[in-house]
Length: 288
Ligand SMILES: [Zn+2]
Image (cartoon, rainbow, N blue to C red; front, side, top):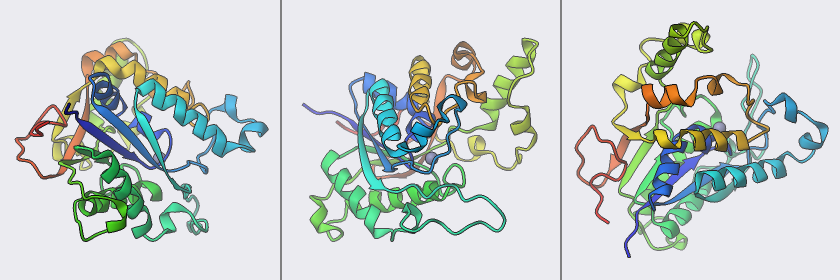
């Protein structure tokens, strides 16, 4: 029996539910084996849900986030693996404070790479997804996630590297997630206006640098996954400490999203199989 396998690498618990989540849910539902790898425990994530901002939550945040992640993985129908590093936190202030001792962004690159190489060689994914070189947003762990994933994509196939981490495996395709797109946000914002509502995205759109056009410049692959949008939202809400259920991103009705923008977007960054872009399936060109 041959099967297809997809591995989605993310920095923190909740990233898997906000970046490419409906795509992973769709492939899992179609019988692809899907594994989410989370690099850090998310210990330094802010509690963004006022209803969860409780002393008993602060005291056991690592545990709470493990439980939330397990619930989200179950909702998406994916397998899950913790790589075991400590969240670096998002440094804020001017000047920026130094990163905390021992955090993921300060660990020498070879350490997370060797661990991810081991997981890749064991799971043998055909497709790997991660973030672009800017991290999708400038959190040090997201940028690190990009560096680790790209290095592991290369190293896992190379028998000379990390021989103790298992038999080499060449992942066929490497993608970057590109979910945060001005065109999508504008369509939804316009739909609010058509319905006589204000819409939550005005501030975002106003400050968007028109040159920062990932959709036009970088997206190669659009995966139809609208049937799985509510699963995506349920998985995101499972990260109850991190997500305000009254937040902007839950305002647009699912039916609008399904009608106006039924896809999730990716950029093919590297491939070991022949490709023909644009494409609508992460597995195009891969023989089972
Ligand atoms: Zn994150």
